[in-house]
Length: 117
Length: 112
Image (cartoon, rainbow over all chains, first blue to last red; front, side):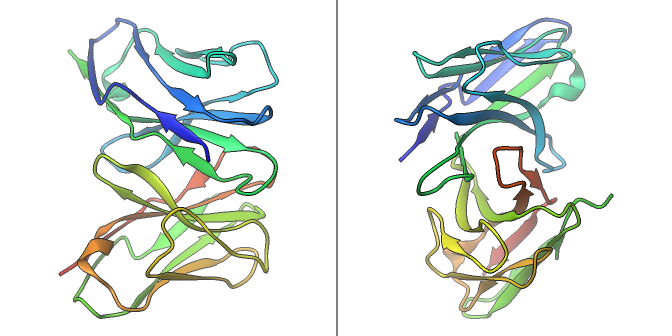
């Protein structure tokens, strides 16, 4: 079974600064997808960024980028120029693409990020 | 585009009561999921439906049943609610192959 570990239950960052959220995962699969989801106080789950395991290039979406280290099974999220609206719970998630349990998301326990004015 | 719609948004049940959470998606997605979210636990998969006509257990299926009524709709039923089922429930859908899951707004269920 796959496991996803987020080792930072809470973090804070000053507005306009950069912060990195950590995520590691354990799998024997070679093909999979990784995701970062954001959950603001509204409770809505919002996709932040996605990474395909077969791609060596790190995914980027505006101020959000990842550092994907496949051999180390690490998938960290970097938020640049942090904004007050980035305050939320962030979840790392894993999706395998074949075999039993394929296309299901396995989530980490989340990191609560607070952006301080 | 409505995306994924869940009803109700809030519900209070007494122990032993039954209820069905409804979920519908308008994105023509093949796969649908039910998750529960508890403090400090992240989201855990209850049941999923990889395609219309199929359902399978996830990580925490005990106490729940599901029905994939058609391609759009996937319901979750609690036959005899227990306080341990107090949680926030999320329905989600996705294309079959590795695209992101889209989530509904969640249902906060309290069992007293």
